[in-house]
Image (tube, rainbow, N blue to C red; front, side, top):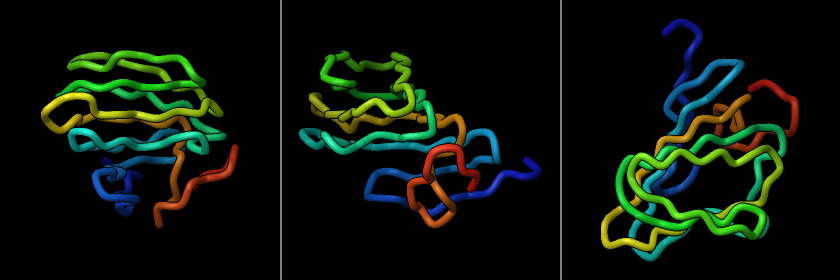
Length: 116
């Protein structure tokens, strides 16, 4: 697609696939027993839509627990502290959409209201 650019891998199991100035798509794979995020994890300037492709887990968003299973769609609003944990026996695979983009092409978090 014109204007779309691939973005660097940020961490093991997380890779931004493509995006433009308005949004960004990434895939995340969390192995059984592992997690991503924690008490300092938030996207200050972007909403995150997380869609579970495969596996089971739990999302903690501002201290509230949400179950994750295939085909669940979860909105993590900008600024919300969150952690995603794989509680199953197979990898937890998600597709994530950030509006606006949350990362630079180098994989660094974007500050609020900035374009990549």
